[in-house]
Each structure stands twice: as structure tokens, then as C-alpha cells.
View 1 (cartoon, rainbow, N blue to C red):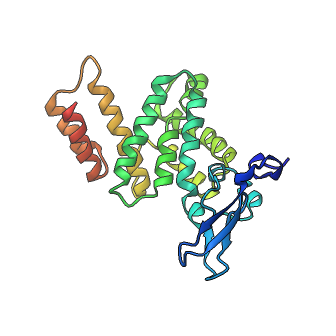
View 2 (view 1 turned 120 degrees about the vertical axis):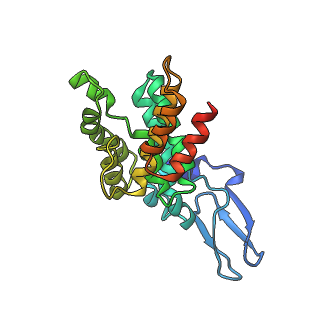
View 3 (view 1 turned 45 degrees about the vertical axis):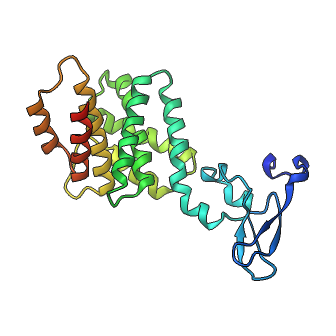
Length: 244
């Protein structure tokens, strides 16, 4: 079955339109399903300014469907995957709003840290959303959410989710590796790991400070200095936790 968005049987009068070449200003005619077209005057190839490539960010058949992705979308495909991963994480946890909230906050802090750390944003955010994805299986099999069980059960679940979304094998492997020890830093861990670790640590401390018996100010300060792997993580923790 052809994708309805690209099937001319569903088109209306807006399916054929004109756009100005960004290089020379010449008029270029587009059909709705054109991913790009060359300018007849200067030869500049321009992306279709109206086509919706949202599904192409995660669909494994996007290139066959569209005849090749525009370079600007191909460059962002991994980053756009995070939105689908966030939805799958929420679907997986269902009504477990506490864990959905935890993962979402870890992703939010990870994105802030990624703005100053030399990391792969796609790997960081996908891992942040999925870092605790093994907790349900750990509790089902072992009646425990202990880190070692999460580390064991998380990667297979994450791999299944990411494969279903058409993620690249290299990204899947790195995400699963981080999940497999996300509570335990190892010598030589990547910046991607450190960013996710620090974001998770920050949320865990934030939750601890909201508990009935929070850490005293002195102990919190010591924990911040010792526990984080990046200086940006420590800085964000000081700002976030001392303002809480």
C-alpha cells in the first residue's frame, strides 16, 4: 500500500505549487511528493519547502518511499528519533507516571548538560529516556529493582524498542551498553555515558531532597562534589538542588 501522504489520489489543488530558488530567486515548480528539485536557471537543488518529513525521522522505509532523504533531514534523523523514543517509553510504562516523570526529567537535565559537553545528543537523549526501561522486567523476574537486575534486563527491552523504530545499529549498541551499567561508572566511559549518569544522579538527588528526610546541607554539598562525573553536572546540581 502506498503511503497516503504521497499518493496522488489524495491530492488537492495545493499539491502542485511554486517556490523561489534560494540562490537565484528563479521560480521552481514542485509536486507535493518531490523531496527536492533542481533550479532550471542556476542548477541549485533545493528541498521541497512544504513536504512533511516527520515520519521519515523514524520510518525504516523512508528512503524507499521518498527516493532519498534531503541532506538536512538525514543529518537530523538521529536527533528526531528521541521524540518517538519518548512516546514508546511512555507507552511501555503505561500508568506508571512516577517512572515516566523520572525518565522525562533525566532527559531534560541531559539535554542541558549536552549543550556544554562534547557528546552525541541523539545517543544521550535516547538513553536518558530508556535508562530505567529494564525495571519492570527486573521486578517481574526478581521482585527487585536493584541496579544489577536493571542492567541485565534493560538492554534487551531497549534494543527491541529501538529496532522497531528503525534506529541505526551503532546507536542501538551504544545506548544498550550505557543502559547495561548506567548506575556504575567504569574507567574510560564516554562523555555520552557521563552526561546520562550525571543527569540521572541529579534527578535521584532531587527526589531524595523532596523526601521526608532530605540530606542535610553539608552532606548534600559533599555528595554533589563526589558523585558527579562532569563539572557541568556538578554546576547544574549546585544550581538546581540548592535552589530547591
